Length: 173
View (cartoon, rainbow, N blue to C red):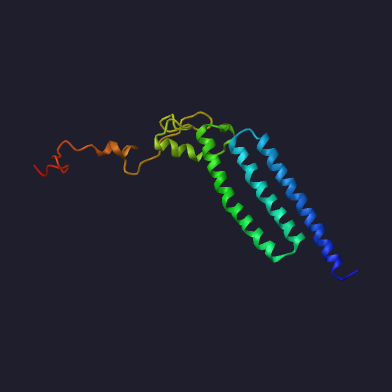
């Protein structure tokens, strides 16, 4: 028996454990995608355990193969997944919100409803009331305008009665 045999055996056991953990997390992500009720809940299952499961599988491959070339091929896979999964989850979440595929009762803070209401988008959730709608159904007040003007900037663009055709005031009388 060579002196490296216990180290190699320990690396193989660690690779096996990481592979099983990665498989378990990927399975949990798949089950979560099928069982969670709405898109906002599903995006957590699609990203968090999936990324960690992928990292565990990649670490298991790196430990079992023990090659620098394989490690150079696996690192970009993990980095690419870590960069794209949060962006994809954000886009899925916004699409689910805009289509109404979410349970408003489970939201603790609904920051997007305020933005939609201030944009005047009545066709989206939270945009049908003057100030938007909170998850409980109560009206959200319009955001304060520091100028004291109306929320619609076009309403302030009407020319003054004393303005001439160029849009400038008539001047002192």
